[in-house]
Length: 267
Image (tube, rainbow, N blue to C red; front, side):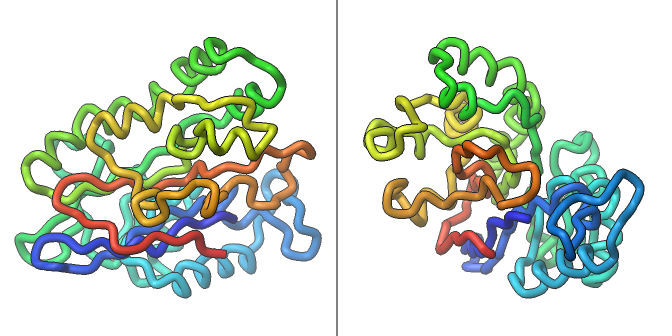
């Protein structure tokens, strides 16, 4: 599993908050620890799920956006003694509030009485995967059309509501395995060093989140995509493509009165 975490954000009265995104892969309990391959459908491993829980405990986050939890977000939260929003796959050591009108697009985490942050989680579809299209020779127009058709619809609810929360003075966090790179990473300078990145790409999801006022906490902490690429794909699992294009597809985005202090890839 890949985990992006350690984003310690100081906000309102300098309250520290560590926000993490963690793709636990098929529920976190379907990888055979002995073989490194996935179990057949229906078989699960309590040992693998315990490893996921241990990884979260070691990272010491306050809030985690889980990806591919597949019904296990509640079990993970229970083992940690945390709160859980199953429909957003967000778990938190702080109480979670599903606000009227939120409709699963976000929840509030109550850090203390009267002090809340908004947290949303996204997981757009993985296929067809844009970097593979670039690697295999697709033109820019085809790549952008694919992104518009596959991944952009999956973030529209968050983009529609999160800017207003930030404008109201609420710290906002959007976690996700976005299954797309960032335009901050696919620059001309990077493409000159990595032949599989044949040219710069203005990846639509990252451009849209940026336009909505959501800042990329990892690139705020590490502005050089050549020196610190921050790869989260591939995690080295059995689903890897033999001619892999490594990328940073798991993000913690921030908006409103939040300041990025640090951001790290764990594992």
